[in-house]
Amino acid sequence: MEQFTVMDDGIALSAVLERPSPVPSPCPLFVVLHGFTSSKDRSHTLAACRAMRQAGFATLRFDLYGHGESGGEFKNHTLYKWISNTLCVLDYARTLPDVGDLYLSGHSQGGLTAALVAGMLPDRIKGLILRAPAFMIPRCAREGTLLGFSFDPARIPDEIGVLKGLTLGGHYLRVAQTLHVEEAMRRFPGPVLLLHSDADDVVPCGESQTAAFLYPDARLELLPGETHHFDRDPGRMEALIRDFLRQRAGSFCTEN
Ligand code: FER
Image 1 (cartoon, rainbow, N blue to C red):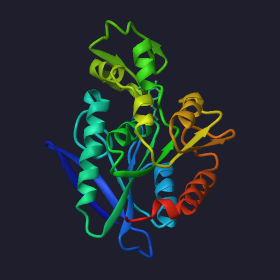
Image 2: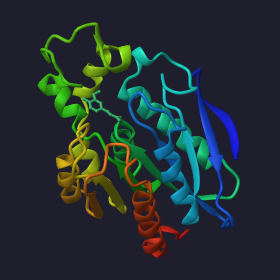
Image 3: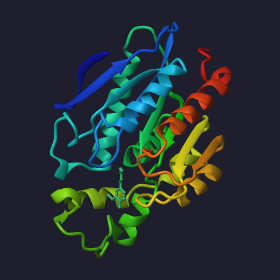
């Protein structure tokens, strides 16, 4: 396990790289994103990374702007900053010795970010695993209902109080209003695994069902009665990730 920071224009991003055993040469690698108010060290993210390594992939998980041990204030985080962070960590991953194909994965708001970045880099990202992706954030920001409260989408306040006593800047909402994830889905031709609980009460699964149609090559696994954080039966989520990667190994693990 290697711990280090990756700089994104003066902001230090805290990251952890772990390789599978045995290490294939070259070794395919997943960059893994956490969700809103979360961090790279939450148990369900560790579990997802473990499953990827068991299938022979290295994992590079990191804390995004304003979260975990990375720089930046939570209040000032936006999806543009998270996109920039992800592009930066992917650029870093390309410089690692003996690393082969690059894959992206994310949970919830990190899943939305991963989907947006994959649409920008369809030539560099070989596959996607999205857990409970929060595809609805841009639509909700445009409609004026997010995190259980309502606002006038044409008159966004400077600050809004959100969960756990945290405050979010209005620019978060202004940025989210501009994003069009359906376009990013159409632009990404690689294999996509969507994992979502049919009972997720934080991010309902409807938009993952739509995504399964919009992505040219997607598989949707609806987990009955799970939570947003897959903590009822983490082993089920891990098995679905392992099985998907092993079944797709022929198309995933090609170097040329
Ligand atoms: C929201 C619902 C869910 C929201 C964010 C999330 C900012 C993200 C959850 C997560 O990343 O776990 O209304 O608004």
